[in-house]
Image (cartoon, rainbow, N blue to C red; front, side, top):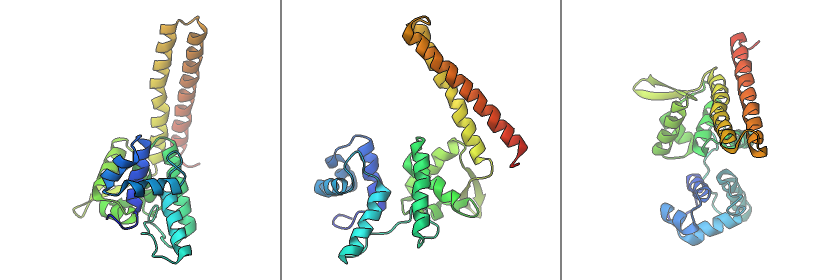
Length: 231
């Protein structure tokens, strides 16, 4: 909607474009916006290295209230209790935890949205409504999360319902622990190439041993916790 206020979805596209190394003109073409709009938006909200879509959207709403102008389009960060600013702030922080661990932001927002519902489940249409994004964005995000076994899909009255369960974090932690196996393999391969008696080879071997130990210990702890339940 050229000429109107940027939506949260557009700001997320800006954040993604900046992370991908795109210039303002490239991002502007994707959004059908003037390059000057993108440039002002990024400059006003921390610059290319610090721009965050959720934070920029909230800041715009605050500026609009102060100036007495029309409010920016409000899209909840995670959906529930849209009038509860404390919960919205928490949802943003919770989302950032997933993002910090390397999860794409849209997937992180879906996970946050599911965690903050009593049932732990939502349909695709409900996710679209709560997050204020396109059905295609939700479809891509839930598909990736399903492949990683971070959510499950059930058929509910001709609709797909996505949900998390009590084992979600168990599976997530196991995946993180087992992902260390590839790092161990690469580090040991590097040690062999450099020579296990050279300083650099010894360093890589120590890294491999550390990651191997950490991964095995993590798996044992997670499995023990899972067997004992919540006790």
